[in-house]
Image (cartoon, rainbow, N blue to C red; front, side, top):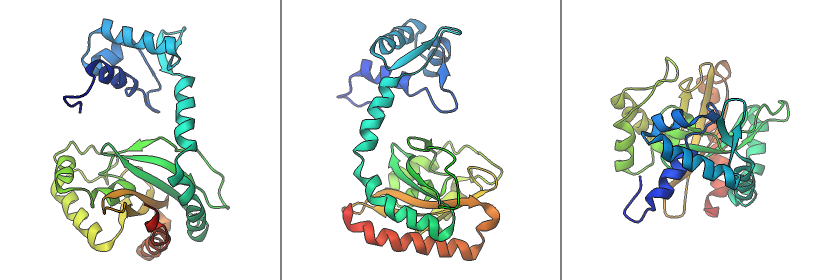
Length: 250
């Protein structure tokens, strides 16, 4: 949310870039204008400016826009200088190989999960690069692990909704979610019970900065039949053990 010191024209321009996603990598002027409730002429001027600077590419076959290679270059700079990934990767490799599941690292960013790393066990072929993907807090293991330890006013903001359903297992009732967050705080870990993707379960443990605020979480994820109650507890303990060795780094 822009504050009094925000350059409003710049905030509007960035909001246009943020319309693009993995699900919608290509958008037109009208689609963006409708979504942001902005004048088409304003959106067009922003898009053409970004295009001239290399941050957007226009598809001549349909006149729609895509994110450009200049953003890829900036993303590479961020990724290569993100020291937290380098600190976690050796531990994530050990976690993934010990439990035979994919291990994820997520950070809390603007009330969402930001995925910054995924490590596959040696027995599995890496399926996709998740770096930079985002997900809601209320329906993912990483998200719920972080949400449970956020500030009370931030938790209230999330609980006030919306809490969109992704599967029939997604918790969309604020009272039910609030009770689960209390359980997560007591247990020290969160479980995504097929709430974001049907058939996939995960267990996640949060980690904190030196001042005690939650920074992110580490999870392991896989097909739901492999995550019975015993394996959930075992995997949570494994992640917790590795995080204890890293805690002094933040």
